[in-house]
Length: 163
Length: 105
Image (cartoon, rainbow over all chains, first blue to last red; front, top):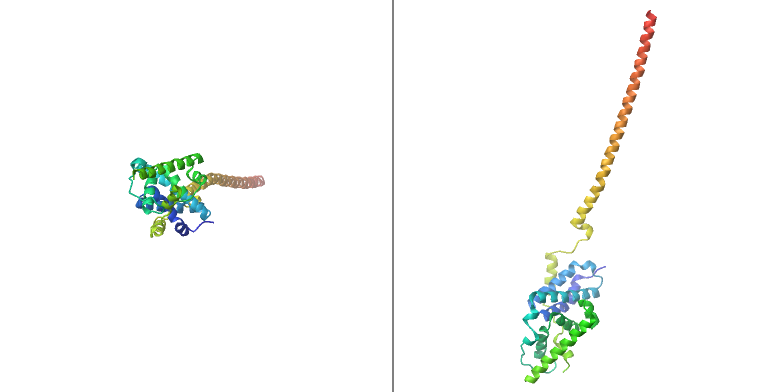
């Protein structure tokens, strides 16, 4: 059995790269990490049974590698949610500035919460899948989601009041 | 504003750099680091060789002793046969001498 490695890279590169990019907010670092994860997959190709299994494996690997990388870089203390700059932004749907602001706010979340939010809203996974992927209790996942959304909403509302 | 929808919009996937696949594939060519099956790894080969040698040495020693024993037995039998022949010849010679002596007297 086995899978076509090139095809797996083509089909999953956006997923892996985007998760790393949104998590690290460092294009070069994200690209390097994503490449490394694919090479890690290449070394384990014999253990991968189907394309779905490959996607699951890649999602899991990049999530854990991103969290490890963030801990290494000590990203978390560098940018707290309160320290995030507040660019002037018009609050309407589809606004690229609002999108950028949300991405910056997400970047300010603690590592585990940030990955939970990314898997929920980028990858559209439900809390059960996220819990399985990150080896976390489902209650922790739900708690991260709830607290993150509250924090993000407060931050956005605070900006609105200031305006 | 629906925050969850805004998040989905803000966090949607972004395409990887155009040369991403090429770089990954180059990485697999530059360092073809696919893990060898366990039976082809050097440590496994060394272990297998050690086990085979470990099994062969006592067998070889046993066979050497058996062969030496067989050779010693054959040599002993040859010696016994030679002694038997010599004894027969001596007895024949003794009998002849005895006969000649009696004839002369």
